[in-house]
Amino acid sequence: MKRINHHVSEELLVAYAAGALPYPFALVVATHLSMCDECRVRLAAHETMAGLIVEETAAMDVDPGLKSRVLAMLDEPAPIAPPVQGAGIFPAPLFEALNFEPPRWKHLGFGSRQSILSDDNKGSVRLLYIPAGQAVPDHGHNGLELTLVLQGAFSDSTGRFGVGDLEIANDDLEHTPIAEEGEACICLAATDASLRFNSLIPRLLQPILKI
Amino acid sequence: MFVLDDHRIAGPKIGAERTVSRVAEPSRPEFSEQTVWMIAVRSNRDKRAFAKLFDYYAPRIKAVLMRSGASSAMAEDIVQDTMLTVWRKADQFDPHRAQVSGWVFQIARNRQIDIIRKERRPVPEELAPAEETEVDAAHIVALEQETQQLRSALEKLSPNQRQMLEKAYLGELSHTEIQAETGMPLGTIKSRIRLGLERLRHELKGNRS
View 1: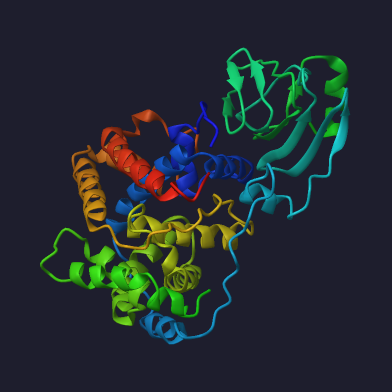
View 2 (view 1 turned 135 degrees about the vertical axis):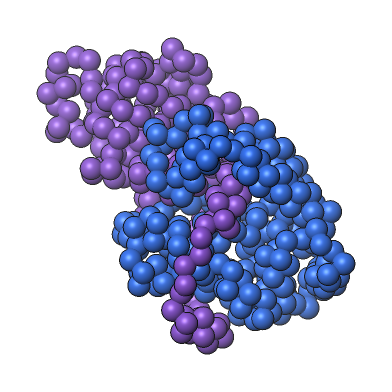
């Protein structure tokens, strides 16, 4: 396992364990958890907390027939889907979001590409491909942005992010991530708002490019 | 997978079963009832133990689901699916890493998100099953002690902190609303994390190059 330096924050982990994260962020967090043993164990601790709270919840009566119905179903054969597997640089939850196919890239210009996995009122999540040594267009954002590195590395004013590292950027961060020399950088990025670019032309193109 | 695979009964599990029947005796009060029932379901497909799990969890899971907006009928449908999954996927429960209530709640939450939001909840890639299947009673006891300390820490919170924590862990707060001030007993959580890491590294040794 590669050394991971940038992890999921405590509040994101709690929100994920509680099922409160919108889909785009939940996908990035689940993908990071697939790559990071430390966060996997931190999640288990939060799941324990959630379990303790469930134990102390005031119970509600269930239909008296429910138990006998469930007990009667125990011996029924039940197909259990085999566990979902990842492929290459795409851990299982991400590969599932890709429908178990390689990403369908769309060109963004200057060699950069993107593949949108989901884009609706809950936010957006997509894969980004940035050629080695190139900058992601200068942008700030309206809300939270999570960026997880799957291949290569990038750096910005806040530090260096390699494979498995998660950057958590709030709306106050105007940053210019630059892909490291060597391999192209592939990231999974989620936002709860569409990105806004600092120059005029990309802003006009924003609704067309969906970035 | 779900059928009573012979290898699970006849194979290396025999040692585990011996340990389980020993720990299930009342002379081992360190294991919570839920853990004893769950291990009996996992290792022995014990239906009486499953019925106990049902009696304990069905009313609580229903209450939690209704608290997050499910109707009574919808909540009971999810409870039914959850308890069947507990039975069918019992072999995936690892008492060395997870606590039963937390594990059951995650199954219920996954199902609820699938049904109500009509989307697949992204979950982390499953780890390869541990090579050793022996129940390490000492480790489980250590985890249960950590859980007990977490429980006492919860009891010491002010009513307001306690309420915030419930809201956060039951999904009533957004990630932006969850602040460090919810009063999470982080110190105790951290010692549980240390134990968990120790176990995970132990299990992964040999499974990963």
